[in-house]
Image 1 (cartoon, rainbow, N blue to C red):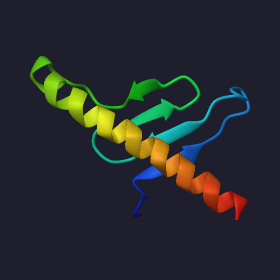
Image 2 (image 1 turned 120 degrees about the vertical axis):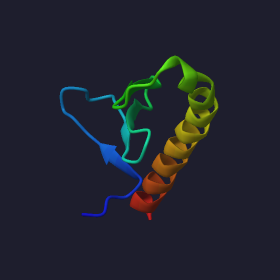
Image 3 (image 1 turned 60 degrees about the horizontal axis):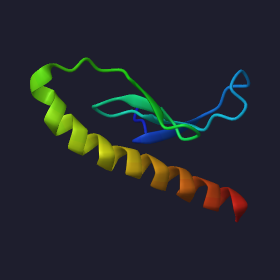
Length: 75
C-alpha cells in the first residue's frame, strides 16, 4: 500500500485536537492545537542536531498540509 506523506487524524476523546500524522521517516504525530509531538522513531544523541533542524521543516510542512486540506474542504 502506498501512503501519502501526511494524514489528518481525529479522535472524539480529544475534541479540540488537530492531529497530523507524518508517515515517512522520521514518523510522528503532531497536535496542531498545542504543538505536542509524539515520535515513532528512536533517536540517539548524534541525531539530535540534524533532527532539530529537520523537525522544524517537517512541522511547517505539517501545518501547510493542514491549511491546504482545510482550504479544499471549504471549496
